[in-house]
Image (cartoon, rainbow over all chains, first blue to last red; front, side, top):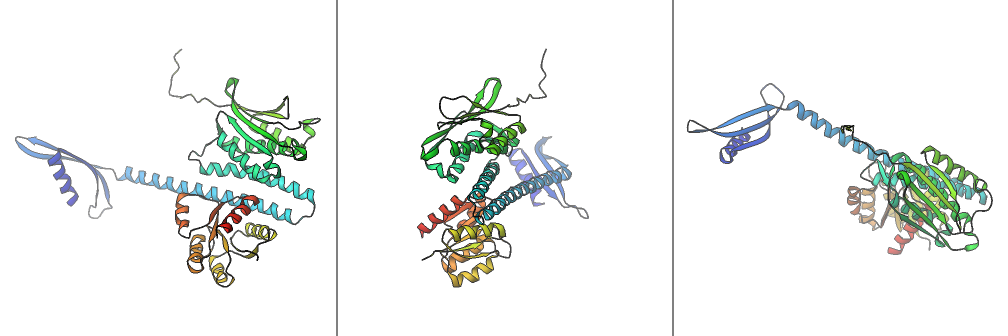
Length: 281
Length: 122
């Protein structure tokens, strides 16, 4: 009972003591106690009033909660690790197919698919690194996406990529579709806007428009799109339209003096009202 | 003379793609090995210029300890391949003085740039 003696001493000297203590009653399991001691003076004699409360059950519950949390974090790490490993395997499979083909068109098509997988991978990379697993900031995310596309494209040296505007958050479910849409639009510009070694720029603007809607604009200063946009790079633009639909966004081509401009309008961000707050009529 | 690169990676498809890509780029490839023990035995004879090392390996020895052995016994440096980049991992891996970390999934360009930069440091 050395602990109790020390607590007693502290209470006498300083007036009070508060702490936790584990008792081992004979024939029973250990018992966690909340210990509270206060110095009292009664009839001119000094004493210590002691209260002990059994907190074994609540302490066990708390420990269990911490253990579960740690376990969950480890599992989440493990899942992220596996997702990234599997994406690497998928990309490797396409690479192997690519390198066993002598057909330039097949090689090109497979490369497009690998670029799309790279865009998805980037989302997982960011999700894993962010402390808040539920959301992604659009600006740094787009900067990184541009970097990865530039590195993978031959035209990357001739075409500048700029990200500007206001930052906003993307919801978890929006991230992959948006990565694919933007990657598709940039690739499209890279491929068609700057023929014959032309130099130019692709600009990505993010910000809010009326009604709190978030917007991403992708524009280039290239040669422009000839004919019906739906016919150009058909699968890519079909993907863009459908992915936009999946996240209740709209995507449209806007008139521009030079080059091509795409506007992706996302849903307004939910403004969550605290349910405890009563609205007074 | 061709530079020798050892691959230690237990995900066979990833390893196969690595091997293919490195050979195409003109490197001599040693491996791939899926366990550290095998890699160490061969490294003693073949003496690669560097090793591409998956951090998490099957078998008794992890990528980190295999890299450490390669460094201490034969002064062969590693580039770590990993799907997970945490301060704890970096701290554990730093002992073997790796030349670089390549985060999965990586692109071809990233792979070749990282290797070229690492070889230039030797």
